Image 1 (cartoon, rainbow, N blue to C red):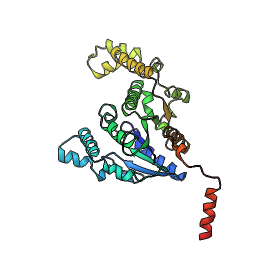
Image 2 (image 1 turned 30 degrees about the horizontal axis):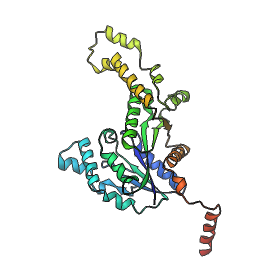
Image 3 (image 1 turned 90 degrees about the vertical axis):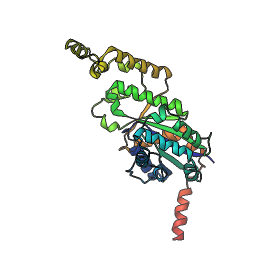
Image 4 (image 1 turned 60 degrees about the vertical axis):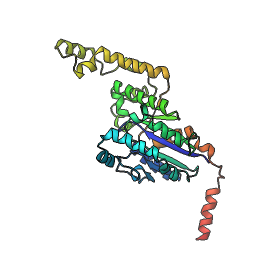
Length: 300
């Protein structure tokens, strides 16, 4: 029996847990079943209590205290420990039917998705190549305020593309927190960031030749971070990154405002398409639900 799930990823502060909560609320309003899994061993506050929480297996605080590790090293240790105890996931997820959408909330350390093979190993266990046979889609969230700084936007886009290549599952890339930029960035300008390309660097508002010239004339130290960020080498690096993303042509973004239920529903529809959720559901007659209501009324 197939199962269906979404892996919610992205850098710290991108709004992953908030999106998971909005998704759960939307599913409940539409009378769809979901199973919420928290795999962030440092997370504490939830709008909806997780059905399965990695902290019941291992917590980052305990690892840092007992092993003497920092936050990043401790997080990697937690995931390595999870991979050694995959029954923790299997026993909870295996009984679920195809009616459920499994929502997996991931931590924000992007090295887990980009160049450490921990999460790819976890994904293999969850998907059809592993034990659980989950039709899995990854939702990679990037904060929409990144569009104000083109260099940061392309760096975030590169991390999304790296995750796509590493995980090898269908991806939905999302610009989150759209409510924070809608008043400051024109809608026509926002549309340019849906499909990243190098032309975004041609009119970068932060790239002012006057600022570069003034810093040179003032005798600024060329080794300072300000000089490096304004210099030609940094611009060439950004253009090389942008060209790489353009050459692969893998990444495009959807826009998300969690305060708008239609926006959450639109993201969910893309996720459903990616995991082929509706194709696996049994067709129902239009009067099925009405008949169930009548039966309940008669019994009462």
